[in-house]
Image (tube, rainbow, N blue to C red; front, side, top):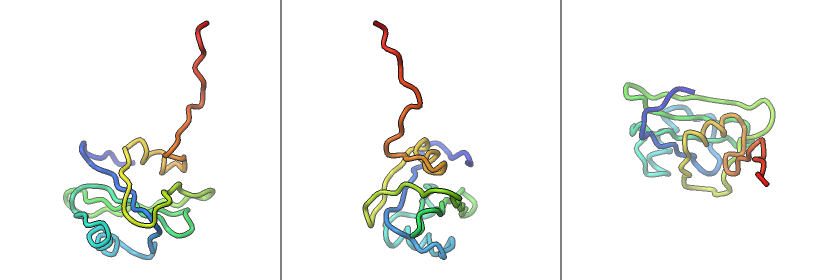
Length: 115
């Protein structure tokens, strides 16, 4: 993942997005449906209907970047809401892109109790 500047907000766009949209179509969706500025430097994440494809839209300061990731197995975890957006942390974004359930991450080990 490209290092994002401090203060960058990460928005997961709820609902299903037509993955045929490119940069301009997704930027229009950010402006119209979310009421946000696509050139703010924040990251906006969209998911397709089948759930195995996401697109990230980000203004890097000198141009719009469009990143795409497709999972070969499984689906990206998405909120149940059909509209609006959810704010994620950078750690949650990393988990999302790895196909991990970012809503309820679990430790892979259990601490031992000192008795």
